[in-house]
Image (cartoon, rainbow, N blue to C red; front, side, top):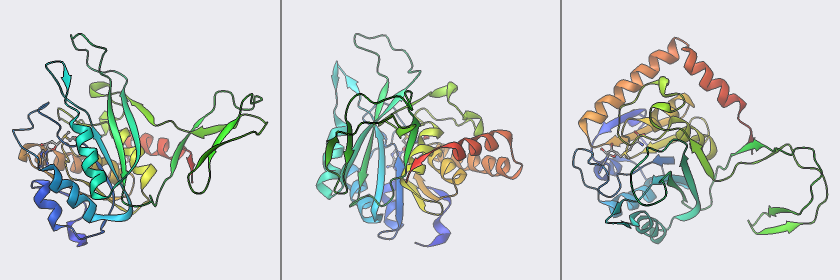
Length: 286
Ligand SMILES: C[S@@+](CC[C@H](N)C(=O)[O-])C[C@H]1O[C@@H](n2cnc3c(N)ncnc32)[C@H](O)[C@@H]1O
C-alpha cells in the first residue's frame, strides 16, 4: 500500500475509497456501519455487497474485521438486517469467528413495551484462520480456591472438550465475549477528545479490539469513520490507520480530533498518560 495514504481519513464514500487500496494490505478492520434507517447520517445510502467484497479483497489473509451493528425495530418488528449482512460476509468467504456483544452500561431509556435495548453485536469475521489472537484476561474471583468441577479446553485444532483435572482455580481467565462500556457523556476517556457524533462507539471498545486482533505498526481500517474513534485508538496504540467518511461535516471534525490528540500526546496530557498506563496493565493470553 502507498504509505502516503496512511494515517489519514478521507472524505469519500467507502465503496469508492476502498478501491484505492491494494489487495491484502489491511491487518484489521474495526467499524460500525450505518444501519437501517435508524439515523440519518446526512441522508447517505450504502452499497453493502460492494463494501463486503472490497473488505475481503483488501484484508490480509489472517486478518479480522470487527463489525459493530444493531437492528432497527419498526412497527414492533426487528429488521434482522445485521444477520442478512453476516450471511453475505460468509457467502463471500469470511469465517464468522465469534459473535460478541457490546453491552451498554447506561443505555438511553426509551418508553416502549419491551425490555430495554442495551446491546449491539460485535461480529468477528476473519479472512482465513486469524493470525493474531491476543486475548484479554481477567482476574478470577475465586483464585486459589479448590476447583469443584471440570475444566474445559480447546485443543490445537480448536476442538472443545472437558478435562477432569483437580486443582486450584487459576488467578486469571480469558474474558467473556460480552464487553461492557459506558456510552455517551459518561464514556470513560471521553476527555481524550470530546467527539460529536450521534452513533460513536466508545474509545475503549476500539482499544480492546485493536489490542486483541493486531500488533504495533499494523494497519487498521475503518470504512465508516464517523467521529474517528478507530483512528484515535489506533494512534494511541501505535498502529497505522486509514478511513473513509461520506459526510463532510463528520470528516472535518474527525480530522480536528486527530490534531487535538496529537497535541495532547506531545504535551503528555494527563488523560493520555492514564490511558497508556491502563493499557500497560492489561493482561493477555498470547
Ligand atoms: C455508525 S457511524 C460510525 C461511528 C464511528 N464508529 C464513531 O465511533 O464515530 C456510521 C458512519 O458512516 C458514515 N457513512 C454512511 N454511509 C457511508 C458510506 N457509503 N461511505 C462512508 N461513510 C459512510 C455515516 O456518515 C456515519 O458517520
